[in-house]
Structures are given as C-alpha cells and as structure tokens.
Image 1 (spheres, rainbow, N blue to C red):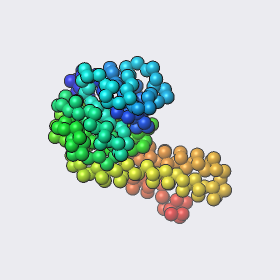
Image 2 (cartoon, rainbow, N blue to C red):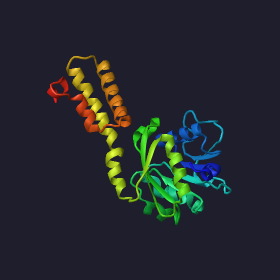
Image 3 (tube, one colour):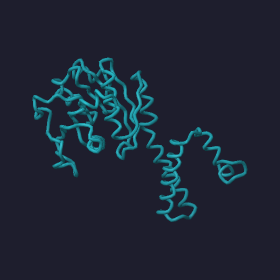
Image 4 (cartoon, helix red, strand yellow):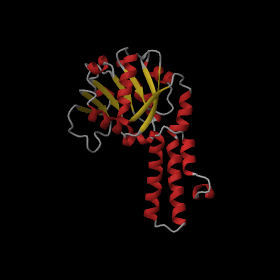
Length: 246
C-alpha cells in the first residue's frame, strides 16, 4: 500500500453491518486499517462488537457528527433500500471521500445519481468473504484516484482477494462466475455426499469426504502452477478407476 494511503487511512464509515458488513469490519479491526470506524446499523452492534475500541455505532446517517471527514464510505446494505440510504451521505460527496458499494446490481451511474459527483467504486464480492476467503472484483469511475484504488484494495483485503475491471459491464460476467459460482460448488458437495451415501458410507463420513475433497481440490487448483485441465488429467490416468467411472 502506498505510504500516502497508510498515513491517512484513519476514519471510515460503514453503512450496514449484516453478514458482509460484519466480515469487513472484523478484517479491518484485525488489520488496524483505521483509527476510527463509524458504523451505521439500525439494529445496533451485532454480537461480539459491542464495546470494542475505535468503533462508534449509529442508528442512521442523521446521527453522524458533522465534523467527520471519512476517507471512505462503504455501503453494505440490501439492494432494495440502497436508493433511500444513499441520500443521507450526500454531504460527503467530495474528491477526498471515496464511496464503495458492495450492493448487488446497483450501477455506478445509479449511485452517482443519488450522491452527486463523487469518486465511486462498485464491487462484486462472493459468499466466501464471510470467512476471509472471498474474491471481490471492483470497478471505479473516473473520479477515483490511484491512492483511493489502493485504499479500496486494502479494505477489500479484509475478506480475501480483489481484482479490477475497467468496463462496468464485465461485472455481469463476474456475478455469473464468482458471485453465483459458490452455489454450484455447494451443489457438487451435495452430489458427492449423496453418491457416497448410496454407496453405503455413513452420512457423516460421506459429508466429511465431500467437503474435504472439494476444499482440498480447490486449494490445490489455487496454488498449483498447473492448469485445471492438467490437474484433472493427473487424476484421470489411463486405465485408472477415475477414468473408468467418468
């Protein structure tokens, strides 16, 4: 991270502290990325956050102090309420503050329409972010500086890896691959478990084998220099049991 970002990454506003917001917040606290984080959550602090230092909790944007000058405002709310929520943060629509959205389906143009001219980053995370193993793809508008991109990378690192696209339309494909992809992985675990049970294995062992096989194979694919196709070939050797049953 550039030194200028490290020196100024002090105050953040997090809007929404559900599953994704909580995952981000835990990572930021662990990494000490800010001296003060103001969290706007109508339901109050989730379990485990109450009383923690460097945090202040607010029920709405109206409760936020006028003197706050955040480097970033991060929106982690439901898509159906984002339009109403955005209006409350127009007072920070200035070059110094970058607005980061992890709200599915809300375009950069739609965000700017509610906030006014502002640096905006739209992101598409996925569910493994809940355990810090997600992949988030981001797209910025022309008002986002190099330093703000670096800050965004630092904040997203709290929940896993991050990557950038320059064409916002590509986020539709990202959603199909990494956003929806976990559902297909979970379906594979279901299918392997059911197949193992049909072969006579106890249900708990069947589930353990399926989970560990998928998790281990995924990690091997992530760290290996070989392509997925080659890794598959390594398992399906000629005349072996894998090839004969495929």
